Each structure stands twice: as C-alpha cells, then as structure tokens.
Length: 162
Image (cartoon, rainbow, N blue to C red; front, side, top):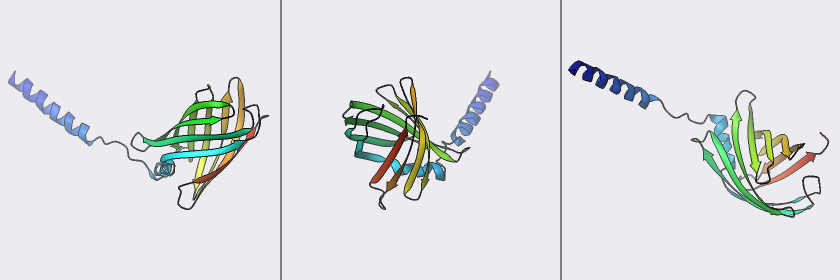
C-alpha cells in the first residue's frame, strides 16, 4: 500500500510540474498591434440616408479591452442617432493564415458584421459585410489616426447592390 501511495505522490508531482510549465500564450507582434484600439472612445458622425437608416448625426461611446491575455480585443459600445439608440459588441483578432486582422460585431437590433483589416502606420483599411434582417451589404473604409493615436477620422462607404 505504501508503494502505491508513493507512486501516486510521484505522479502527482510530475503532473504538477508539467502543468506549471504550460504557459498562457503571449501575443505575437501582430496581435500586439491590436493595442491601437485599447481605451474608451467617444465618437460622432453624420450618416447619409440608405436602407440601413435615415440621414442624420449620431454619437457613441465604445470601451475596448484586451481579451484572453491580449490575443484579442473586445469592444462594447452604445450609439444614439436618428434611428434611435442601440448597443453593440465586437471581437477583433489577427488571422495569421490570411495575414489580416478580423472583426466580428453584433448589434442590439440583430445585425452582425464581419470584416478584415490591415494596420499600416497610422492608417487602418477595412472591408466587410453587414447583415441586417434578410439583407446583406458590403462596406469598406479607412481610419486615419492622429500622430499621437488619441483620435482618428473615419470614412466608410456602403454598397447596397453588392
């Protein structure tokens, strides 16, 4: 019986040592670029009338936090405009196979977006698809950060016919 207890004890020590050596993955250089988004952002803009909504001004606030030790970032936002108020959430990460960043976002009105983007110096170029109800639209845009990366200007285009 003592031998069994000793063997179990040794096995437990070996497993504990092996478990301790398994470390949480660290963000690679590309994933560290996601840090450009971290923080709390307020925004405002003006939309043109489209099937996605009426023309008018909008304002919003988003908080971006690291997710899973910085391997991803998570956005949580609220927006107010002529179409009313809504909330949204987004997860961004790096797709090493396609060498692009990706985002998946979901809104309180049932819409969801998928997109890919690149980060080059102070510019982020993106393109993707938004689905609202039974409709699908393509979009693309550019965010240009100020040199201090504390603000950015964004221009987005949406195609309604594919």
